[in-house]
Length: 520
Image 1 (cartoon, rainbow, N blue to C red):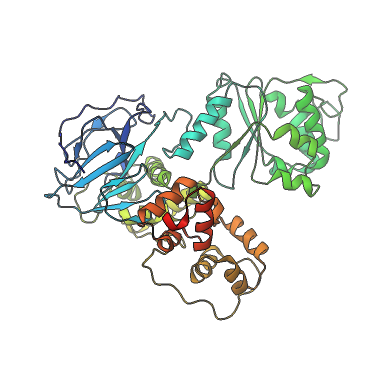
Image 2: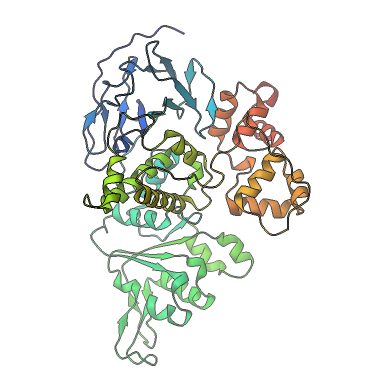
């Protein structure tokens, strides 16, 4: 590898608009801050130029979301900590010989990587226990729709939103519980020309069955007992804005038929009224159910599903964008801080944890954030937000960080000791996530052996894994799978353990990708 020619001075990246993520040219590589001893610095980014750059305490300047540029400025980080450059699609990283903090490298799934000459985009670099950096390449587009995230999945999600924002067709938003489907619907509204009009959100699961039609479509005076006046339904109340029908899979079949007609005719017929009244609102729907399965089992109308299934936006689960966990953690923590005043003990304690500190270790441990990034988050962003709320409550009570990580946060690494396999099969009811992970790990994620240990069929085990958010080999993104294989020096058994899949499953995926397992 050719030697570096470090340059301490670099051009500052283009300043972004207030409250938006830093924008860099798609062709430019960048270094992002995913963790800092001062949590206010999380999300800052620096765009790499054509020359190697020395990163340390005093340079270069990382641009924040509000347009302010500043160096890392952690007093415990060396002035010359590491040198980074981007060549031929990979990042070359060298630790400075004089640096006081060691470097540690992690893959996109936060699995440990060996020290190497170069690293793929998406690699994480920890500077001791002070700072966590992400080596990124590709578009870093503005967060102009209220969705936090810099991962490839988050960028693709924002692009889908912008592509569909100004359409008139009904959009179906799909995703697991807690991924933020309503946020996506609001983002569609915000990014559209309808942004100044109302956004009306309806939780279909919470509507009483005898009032669903009245709430959605309205009613005429005297249409039923108690209807003393006529009422516009929510479709017309939304005006030229957006009506969001959340949990649409919960609607009764009788209402589904009327909803289908409403979407086809772009008009509603209020209860007790013979007139068809037009509405102008854009309709966005959402569900965490597989509507195709619901149709097969007779719980959802096939003709309505055909009307809704395209276009659709699929919101990725949090476990598929580990890089965004740190950004969301800092965002939720800052929100809790903002909600408390300086005149309370909790407020003072929280503010002390987001200010620059030269204490050892940092007030919020980096290892805790890494644990959060490794966690599977079966309830997604909602679960992370609740975890931060619990952390804040602990700080408010004790005045210091003493929070425990979520259950089963840290997956077993290649060198971790394995727990013994259970001697007797547990009950056939679905186990908790941590118990299922323990049995999977004890049997090297070989599903036939795990199913036998649990006393259930492979089909039942597969169902449990999907419900609890445990990935099968086919669920692992191609890029993550190949990065893990590279990171472990082509030792497939170690890569399989890091990915938490079976060795056989990993070999099959490599074959599907055209990579002979023996030469992977």
